[in-house]
Length: 276
Image (cartoon, rainbow, N blue to C red; front, side):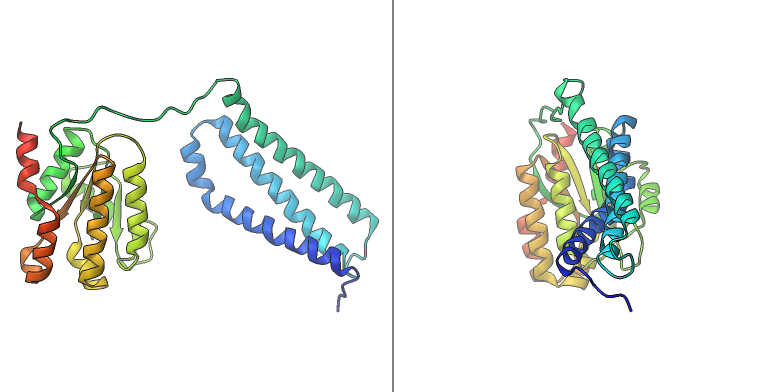
């Protein structure tokens, strides 16, 4: 049975090992989307250098932990290997940091906020209407007005886009199935956070379709969903957003329907605005 021969160094190396391992797991988990968002090969190489740096540190710390036990017992060869790996990791970390910083320092890249002039006639906030009219207005805003949009729906993304004649609009699929595109109907805070970030992403007009309010109520209760809808409405009002909520009158009780329609504007108001 291996024994610890240097408790202080063992604990230190173990803490560093756990911390760097968590960083590696996070980097690997977000790697695909991060590289896609970075776009440029130069920055992708910087990301890969960063990942490799932490991988080297993880391996070095595994050796470090074992060196503090009778497994390696401060073996000088492994101590040398560990030192080389830590040095290489530190150098790669420096290189990746410089690769990210230098282009901006030289003015080769700059962060430009995205903004557009608002449509004066639009009244930001939330609207309610039947499914057919809501879908039609959502498609019109996405296609004719070129608004960035996102749909929250019970349909899988491909099915929803095909049904509305769309190709690229992001879709949050509300479902209990285990799928990359699916989000549980009970995770209203997750859906809220995603929609809030979408609304705050840029100073431009944008539209959200919430196409499953009845399902939300079934899974969460009326009060939680009403609070969710009114919060989204407030975020939209502050961030140049239009929220379109499909409402099936027959599926809601009188109280819920009354509160919902008092908080939201009828979609006919939006139709009149777009008709001008």
